[in-house]
Amino acid sequence: MLEVMAETAAPELLPGISLDAEEKSRSSLEPGYVVICWNDPVNYMEYVTHVFQIVFRWPLQKARRHMLQVHEQGKSALARESLEKAEHYVHLLQKYSLHATMERDE
Amino acid sequence: MKRLRSQGGFIEFQLSPSESLLFAAILSRYPCLPPAHQPLSKGRKLPDAAADQRLLDEALAEQRRENKQQLDLLLADPKRFREHGADWRLSLTPGDVEWLLQILNDIRVGSWVRQGSPEDPYQHLTKKTAVDLELMEMSGYFQMNLLAGLNASSLPGRPNQ
Image (cartoon, rainbow over all chains, first blue to last red; front, side, top):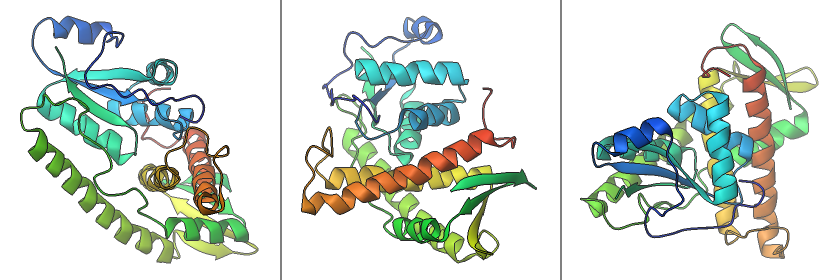
């Protein structure tokens, strides 16, 4: 995003990534993959919020909350999904040129 | 560049003559991001990581080829991009805007990558990076105007605000 956005690449899903309540409840039931958006200094905050709204069909408030998490904490876990769905989301986010990856949830 | 109206499923934008020139010139630089730019995962624990990465790269490359063709059609279509008196008009569906946002951000991020992905491009400005910095800023300018036009329109396509 346009302001801070230090590169905080890390090899695995790290402590400190928090999931929403619905994602947490599922995480106790099945293994999965976490879709993560990483910070960068080039994407506009409004643009990132917009992309989250479109890709995940989130309301503005939720999209903005995740955008701010990316901006302030370096990354945000956006969804916890099966392998195929996680790949689908990463593909969509990368079509918008966001820095998104999927990591095995452990 | 500003949004004029939303009508008949289209959002109409007004561009000055210089903006129309810049708009076409910037879009002619698409794609800017290098192929296979993004990893699918930072870890190494995906079951078929190499195959999945290859599929993702191929899908994105194919998408870019299609986008390039669509872009040429858009810029040559007088119903969507045309001179109008002293100005220019750009008529886009919300889907077109969404698609153009992707195109412009490819150019924005790609030109940033070509500068060496600096934290602050202005601190590392050189003769070599100046053109890419300008490309990055101008694509961002059009991006934000398209986004503002989309947000201001009452056309469907957005989740609840």
